[in-house]
Image (cartoon, rainbow, N blue to C red; front, side):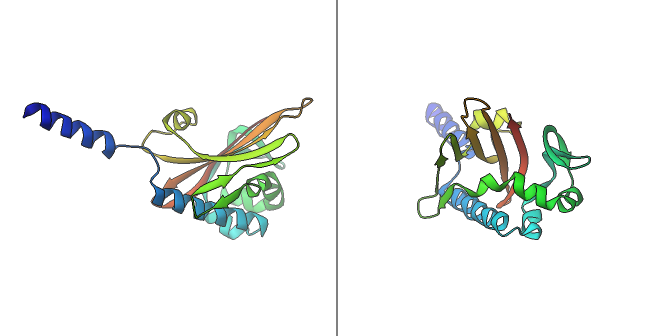
Length: 171
């Protein structure tokens, strides 16, 4: 009997702290990500500001907004540099969201691909998040033989609200 209780408690413990996205959480995430894409396309900085966790990590705004990977910017700095910000994040609009099956179709053109994924524990740890956090990543890869690089956009889902939290890029 003790073994049965132990196994039952172990089973409950494993699934109570699972970091996997449920289908409902995937749908919430992708619905809001599609809204984020629409706001970028429409250049709707007011809507985007509600979908960004400030300070936004990965940019600096000394004389102009630029990707630094180590800096962060405030809402005021994003608004002041909105044209540049919208240009820097336009590639998040390229992958296509399918809400019927909660997937994102990878965008490919030439050497460039943009994909999205719900991160597992290892991916979360890489970006500094814990296993119980819900993290969604959009990554642009450019396999240009002369100048390869990538940009990653890290979104977190907190209280059913998707927010862009970090941006990272390598030339």
